[in-house]
Length: 488
Image 1 (cartoon, one colour):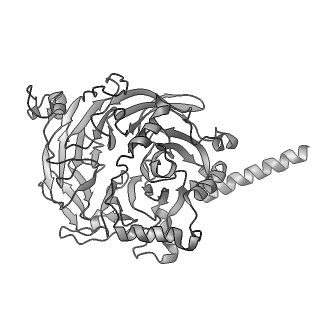
Image 2 (tube, rainbow, N blue to C red):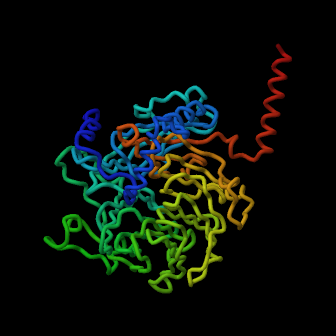
Image 3 (cartoon, rainbow, N blue to C red):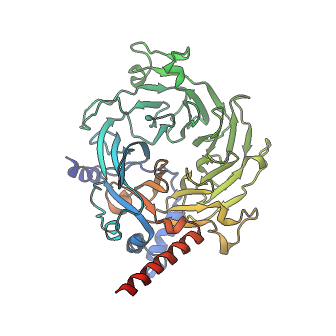
């Protein structure tokens, strides 16, 4: 059954994929086409395949561990779930991902078991030996939920990572207890799984902007209605008054199937679609949002439903993503279609929208789709983009300059590039249970004619450890080699 799905996908034509960016204008497309074919000359830029071949040759040097998992269908979101067990050489952990099909089978939310190899266990030759067209033995499907519509975004509840929220192409947010949900077989005509809770309140589709609070069981969402909506899952658990039980025949089919909860608040201030949201790491009442109006907005639910601070021109184009530093609640990252990542200090922002980033990171060549702070080191973060790269940055390495960097130092702070994906990297997630381990997913349909690629990887610790530590270890190794040579 699985082997026939990619063929079905090609026959029926590709679906909308990725972040569904606004179409490029015709002039840009013509220029790109001319650049590729003019006088039959080979482009000076290396092709995707050339860059990938070069990257693959360096895998044993750059990585402590890497697992490549070919997906039958594209996936728009991937998240780590709870760690299940620890062993000597590896641990076992839940992994959540989506399957976005062409309609020949239902869209699904997949719960997988992932074996995470511990640092300095995998041999170099083992790391380099993987088949791009095969499924990884480290990733095994555990359970499938048939999702009502495609899964655009997955977020787990920090207080209980067995509870996840999903965004689909509808106004509702769906809440799932993935351990309690029955396993389903994704066959054509199968009825979808029943969500454990439905969060209502949006007036138009909410597709991507979704976050769960680290301190309380709160959820925020943004959508095409230009609003940010706040809920408390606790309102359902404790039988609060804002639970709305649908009577038969009322509401849409999804809502009629299970309990729903109305919002704690609806926050208005954006002038276009809200693309991403993030909670403050220290307060369930403070959060931020970004959107296609190029604005970054900070909200405080204790004060009002209008913006607390609004940065009118945070970037030169649509904003796609935002993340709030869990170690320093003054630092906020934003990523944009203008290819840059900006770092804001909320102490430098004022209510009239005056405020500029304390640093602008310029290492991507296409729209930035995802930014995320490392859970392990306060100054480190990742950014992924439509250029197929996942960049790892360290803000401490830029010297905390306020001025815009010169052209020669435009990639200051960039210390690692993961180039294992051959098309846009639509999502990634740092593993909080296993330091420096990342899962990332790309939509490779346009490049390879397949589904998607899921990769789980950890860079070599020689790359991020302090220089003095690395040099001391190399000296120790050198002494050991000399000692062994003397004995022989």
